[in-house]
Length: 112
Length: 114
Image (cartoon, rainbow over all chains, first blue to last red; front, side):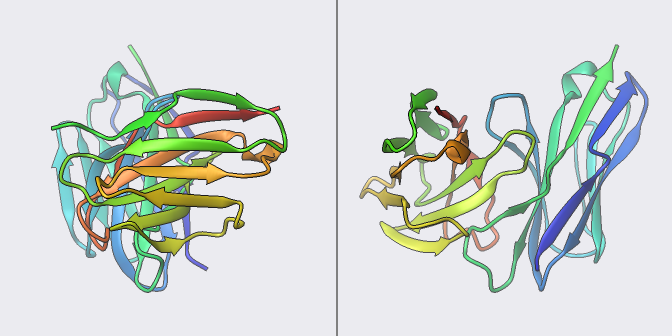
């Protein structure tokens, strides 16, 4: 069964304290791995798509990496405005088109 | 460029009623997917519409149904509401069959079933 597990469930950081969020996945064949940011009561905001092991993408203080079993979202020198829930999702070969399988997310809090 | 919009923002219904949620896709997008997100959980795929046809469905009962219109907007209908249907309902649009295209989400409709 295709599955996504994110850890930790919650992460508290001081402003400027870098860290990483983990997304482990089990999928029959990976078409793509997606990272989203979600603020309370709002829809997910697209961050990155990764397609193959070894691929990396960056945006401001965020960097996403991908291996054959997991993805990391590295946050460098975070600011309070980075506080949100970060969702990881995979799309599998052979699955329903458009079916993103999401993890439960990591809730990040960054204190000034 | 107009993003994905959804209406209404909030909705309160009682068990057994029916509800219709609406979504307008992002400009240039012809594919719409619907997701249900319970509190503290990740979104779960309900179904996808491409060019007015259902193109994939998740593990949801038939009382969850949908439509897509020629302008690519979409509706999600839920009949015989149950308490467990209380959730944030998200609509996402993309350019094609979302094979490898990013899906862009709307703000969601918060449904409460009493």
